[in-house]
Length: 105
Image 1 (cartoon, rainbow, N blue to C red):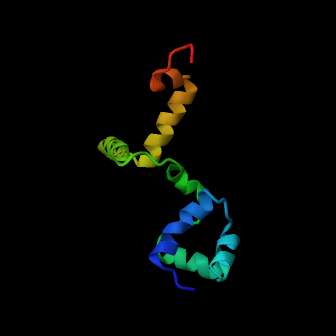
Image 2: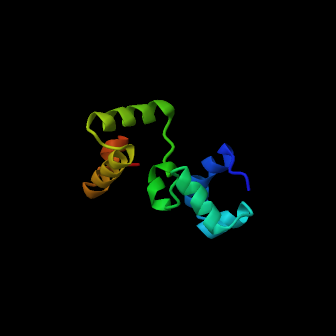
Image 3: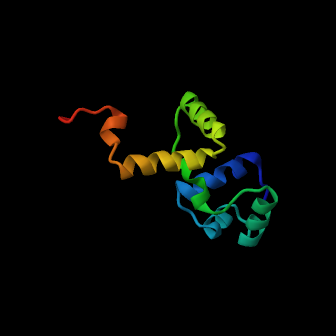
């Protein structure tokens, strides 16, 4: 199996969006699970789907840049900022305020 850049970029999507296990990904790539794990480890690609929470969020490039800049200014990762924002919105029921939605909607 050749681990092309395209294949390597697809792994997070397969884990998160398609919800494939490492065994299923290995089968798709016609390789062993051990070979997949070694290849990913050598390239520092996590096979832990929970590490890709922000992968599900695909903000516009300008929005992403703003979020990354805000997080970096505070010494945070983008994931930490996204988690903090979502936790606060949910905890304080700020959906309508953040989305600027009138009560009638």
